[in-house]
Amino acid sequence: MAKRDWPLRFKCAHPGCEENVTYRYETRRDLQDSFELKHYGANGWKCTRHDAPDEVLGPENLQTRWESTSSQTEYGVFFGNSRYIHGPGFKIFAKDLPPGTKLIVTARIELPA
Image (cartoon, rainbow, N blue to C red; front, side, top):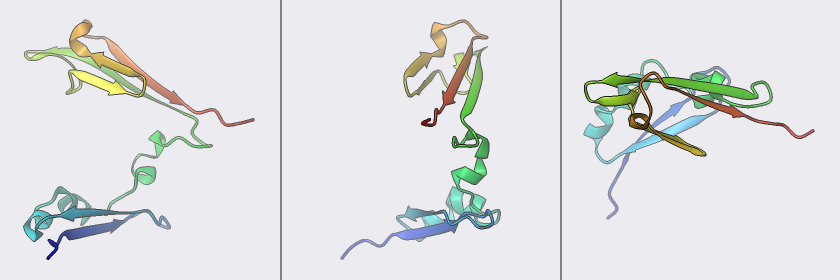
């Protein structure tokens, strides 16, 4: 017999949006204790397009920028809470650079003519 899973579904809380998400849990207790149920159940879940609209690239938003400055802590040098950051086309170790170094990541789209 197949093991049952416990699904939790949300529809985007933004009016008119049809996006949805499904989380699956192995037990009912996992579902009841889940971060998603506690945080999205009362407030409503929002899809990426409506939760962080400035980060979504499209015809109206052709470019976005993210910036982080490294800092020295008693445990080493970090960008925010990370010693190592990577993304498409780059990798950076905070300890390789002096504290105060800025990491600036820019993404830009170019639409066809």
